[in-house]
Each structure stands twice: as structure tokens, then as C-alpha cells.
Length: 77
Image (cartoon, rainbow, N blue to C red; front, side, top):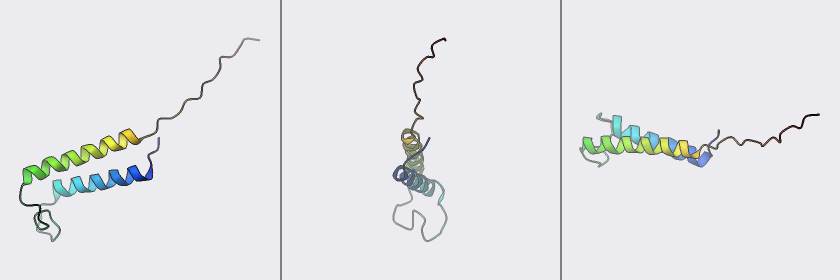
């Protein structure tokens, strides 16, 4: 089961964005309050969870199912 490179990149970006909104509450220069996203922590929590759920959906829907080769029934000798 494989996933295309484009979908994998999208999954990684969504997970990083979701984790960023979920976890970064520090006073670092790149936290979501410092870059202008405000202090709506509940909204950031919900959006972070949604981003991670979308990443899981994109990953699961992008996997290729293994193809099965039809084997003709064998005839008795």
C-alpha cells in the first residue's frame, strides 16, 4: 500500500499545522499569538484537531489497495 508523494507532502503539512495549533502556547517568536492568530485557544484547539483528522482522511483515502490477480480455476487432469 503506497501513497503518492504529493499526498504524503499534504499529510505532513496538515499534521505539522495541526500540531502547531494544538501545542504551541509558549512565548516563542513563532507561536500563534505572536504571528497574529490571536488568543482564541479553544478555536485553535478545534482547528488543530480538524487538521489532523483531515490528514488522517487524506492518508487513508490515498492508499492504493493491492490488486488481486484473478486466477482461473484449475481443471482436474
